[in-house]
Length: 111
Length: 111
Image (cartoon, rainbow over all chains, first blue to last red; front, side):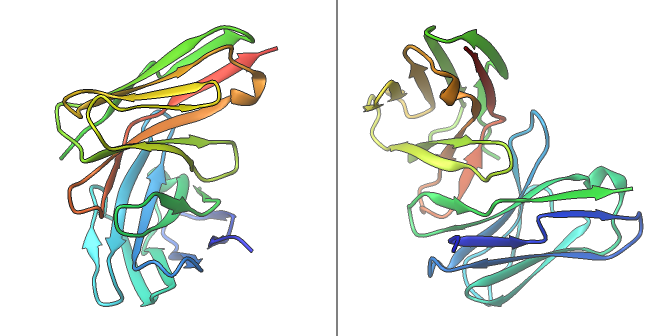
C-alpha cells in the first residue's frame, strides 16, 4: 500500500459544486500539506497542518478549506468550484526536517 | 515569501548529452531538496543538501548547494531517456517544517 493515498484520482465537476478531496497517510507524520500544481508553476501550498488541532493557510488558500480529521487524515474542500481551480492536487506528509512524501495526485477538472 | 526560480523551464536533448538545471533564490535556505516527478505520480526525493558548497552524486546526477545556501544546480551526465521527467527543487526552512518549491524543469531526453 502507498504511504500517502489520495481519493479520488480523477474528478470532473461542474461550476458551483462542492467537492472534497481526501488524503490518508501511514507514515505516522504529524505534518500534512495540500499543494496545487499548474503547468510552469511548480507546487503551490494551499493549506498545511502540524497536528490535529492545527490548521494554517498557505499562499493560495482562497476558495479552499481543509479538515484534519485525525493524524492520518487531511481533506481539502472546494466549497463552490470554479473553472480556474482546474489543476492537479497533491497531498504530502513530512516529518521534522525530512523529505516530503507525496500522494499520486488528484486531477480535478471544473467545467 | 521565499521564492525559488528554476531554469530552464523546458529542456529537450538527445541521449548522451550533458545538461545542467539551476535553482536560484534571493533567500537563504537551511536545506535544498531535489525531486523528480513522472506523469501521473507525485514527486519523489532524489537528494537533500544542507551545507553550503556541498556536492552530492547519485550515479550520473551531480547536485551542488551554493556556498551561500541560496542556489543549487543539478548536472546530468550522458542523459538517458529514463531521465525524462519534471525536476523540482525545494528549499527547507530553519524549523524543518516547510518546503518552498521552484517552478520545475521539464526534461525530455530523446533516444
